[in-house]
Length: 331
Image 1: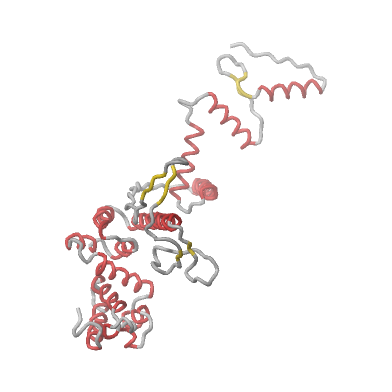
Image 2: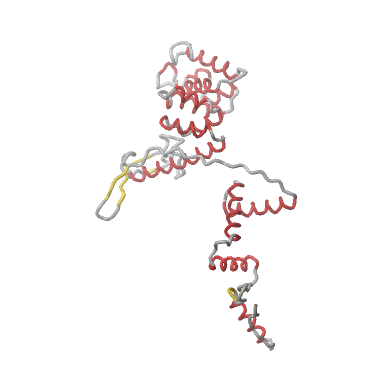
């Protein structure tokens, strides 16, 4: 990739020039550029780990500063590039080249997301998922994977008797991102790989090992639907979605629309509903409308709901000095 002994000034100058020419090419090879940025980050001056990375030779203290100044890359994108380069160079060093090529062909946005959580033995599963999924679906899957990974890590730490302090051992306790910042959390206690004791009763205990990494989540496919509304209809729909958002706490319209539809089905489908369900609906309507209802059987005209309300009506009329006769109409 670069001329000279790795880490030497000649090598550093060569890879610097290649990175600049690659970044300025009409069609940027993001994979090649990512690998070069990772090498710059990982290679110390003269190959001596006691020395800082080679970009210090050029007057930079951070790889993102070099990338912005000389390659025109924003710091966030440069950081993504370094992580992709690391994944391809280290994690996937011994992976099937054909599978790695399929992974690269997924495109920059999908690859950058998957590289956040990528493990070599899970490459095929991620590729199969990503080849038939949108970027948003992959983004959600990676977030779900990360949450499960954090959960597993905390369980292993708790089970091992370790104490999780903070990124700054002398600072106040704060949330720690264990997965994104490996080695940065201060941990004290037993081995991280300790077995997890599970008590089935007071006399017998079995031990199981929690997996180091969760399974790649299955991506649930989205089914798009398009609606057009008149202005008055749109106002009603928007108001309903806003109310559903307050209940669900979700910003996703699909989640809130599902909540509304679930509520509608639960309160309007009585084809197989029990008498108890019908009575609960009447009670809900009373509460919603702030009124009292009385319901009668459509065949016998006998009260099936609100008999107490009927009694109170009769009592009120009697107290007013009027004559009351409560009889059930005949069919």
